[in-house]
Structure formats: structure tokens, C-alpha cells
Amino acid sequence: MSIACGLPLLECVYCLACTRWAWKRCLHTAGHDSENWPEATPEEFEPVPRLCRYILAVYEDDLRDPVCAPPGGYAIDPDCVITKKNYRDTQGRVPPYLLYLDHSHADIVLAIRGLNLGSQSDYKTLLDNKPGQRKFDGGYVHNGLLKAAGCVLDTECDTLRELVEKYPNYTLTFTGHSLGSGVAALLTIVVIRNNQRLANIDRRRIRCYAIAPARCMSLNLAVRYADVINSIVLQDDFLPRTATPLQDIFKSLFWYAFARWFIHTYNSFSPFMKR
Image 1 (cartoon, rainbow, N blue to C red):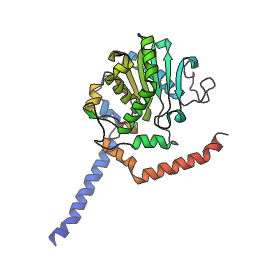
Image 2 (cartoon, rainbow, N blue to C red):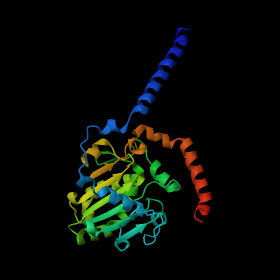
Image 3 (tube, rainbow, N blue to C red):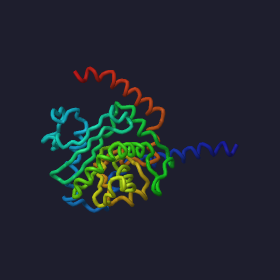
Image 4 (cartoon, helix red, strand yellow):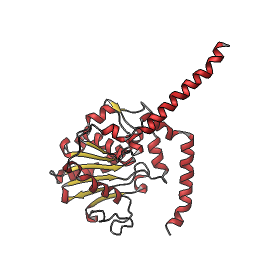
């Protein structure tokens, strides 16, 4: 009897604790995470707007006749695009990307687009993971994103090696947005660990700019490669600041059902949207 009487009290304490956690979570802002960080110099931030335009260029079907170019265009020379892959080319194993030879900035750029809400293959890549599933380089990484990074390197290895050898003074930059940034970040680590595949390229020539990155590696790896991988997060952007345990929400039946419904609706209306 006494135990039964104590259950409502325990329920109240549990509810209050959950309410307190949720309240603190709602009041948490991005400024708390970065209030002690040093400000980036203009030189450090200079590549970011340019690389964002390159990522947006991946969305275009024809760069010579762009449909949704930002003001000022993509600042990209179509003749210097080495390769441009779509979902059909990658068979859905990797988000679309392009490889661009940027002579004006002495840079070899591989840019990967972000999550496509109408692509089932992107969801499969994002959800192909569970805590502790993939141990890599002394830490843990996202399983699906690592496999996508490996596919990119296997496909473009020969081309990248030729460009790195032909232009020894050029930097090699990997960049991406959202889902693509996770692939770019892990691709950077894979290239550094297997630099012999790219003519033993020096680490100082490699860099990565991850725009709104998905969480894809454990803290020890993030610290170890902080000199190469730069994460750019806009204020309170949800995805990069989501705690790792909360990512399991996206694996729930509710979100999976919602994604399937959204894809079906998107595919149903896409023919009318293209007219």
C-alpha cells in the first residue's frame, strides 16, 4: 500500500525533471556554445561565400543556362568543371557533386550538395547509422556518410591525383552543405589517412569547409582534424546543434512515415511543378 502511494510522487518528480530539461533546452542558444570562441579573420572567412556558390551550382542541371542562380551568379567557369555527377551517375550512393578547377584562387574544389527531401537514397544514407556502429581512426564516425565518402574517393581518385600532380601549388578543398558537408568532412579524413592514393599530398594542402554539417564524428576526431576541417554554422541552425542522442528521433516510425509521405507527395506533384 505504501509503495502504491509513492508512485504518484515519483511520477510528479519525473515530470518536473523532464519539464526542467525541456525548458533549459528551449532557452539554450547558439551563443552559449561559441561565446568564448575567437572571431574568424577576414582571410579565414573569405572562401566561405565563394564555396557556398559552388555548392549551389551542383543543383543546376546546366551551368551554361542556370535556372536559379543567386545575385551575381555562381562565379564559376563551366569550362573548368572537371566532372559533375547527379543521382543517376552515383546510383544514389552519394549526393550529387561537382569537381571544379578554380584557377583564379589556385584551388581544386569538390563540392557536394545537401539533403534532397525528395530522395529516398539520401534518407538511407542519413539513417544508416547507430551509436558505436563504425569505429574509425581511434574514434567513431557516421557509417552511412563514411561509405558515401569512400564511394567519392574511389570514383574520383584518379582524376584528383592527376590534378594534384599537375597543379602542385593548388590547394585541395572539400566542401558541402548539410548531408553533403558530413560526406565532405569524412572524405577529408579518408584522404589524409590514405594520401598515397593522391600522390602523397601534403596535409597542409588539404582543407574542408563544412556548411551546416551533420554530426558525423566523435569529439576526439573533430579535435584532431580541427586544423583541416572548418565547420560553418549559422546562429541556431538545428541540425549541427542537435545532440547526438536526439538524432534517434529521425529514426522513429513517425519520421520515417512522414518522409515516405512527403516523397510520395513530392513525386506526385513534381511533373506539374516542372511545367
